[in-house]
Image (cartoon, rainbow, N blue to C red):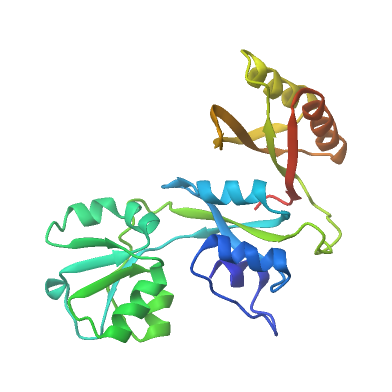
Length: 261
């Protein structure tokens, strides 16, 4: 759904599904696919930490972002009623976004599954009449299931931000016109005041810090890589922010420059 919304239902668009995010980006790096669409943050659940790690580790860049309104539905085989359901399965992130509904149905056994739509595919293929999946309504249409309860997410304002990721050496899609956002990763010396100094440099460069995330450095306990999103109104300010960080930080990686959704 996110891929089609971001790229349009264009002729020749082929979507290759993978089980794990690492497999998705392995195909991008190997040139087996042109790009990948992966979630980076949900407005209820928060950030997808694994994807930050992969962005830093692999030679990929963010080329575009989009926001998708997320609606979760309880879906089961045709003819099944909610009273017949004994087990509910879905991706752990989706389950965490539907805590209130699940808490109100203590009779359900809640089972994590590898994918939202995959849970519906599984129960249909296996003929499980006591199992429901939590997934988008599109999954019910694709696999021939039925929506039992619509909109079970904890809050109606539930959005996921997705990135379109390409190989570092891939030709950019478009001229770059309208770019006003940049994602960066940086590491600083483990001394008092170094993070504050880094953020002050961004402020002096005239960019607006819109997000900051930290991830641990493997093998270096209590040291972190910081991920930031900044907004800018001129390319000069973006360059100034980069130059200021590079003077101060022991590592800076540009994860992507793109137009904010």
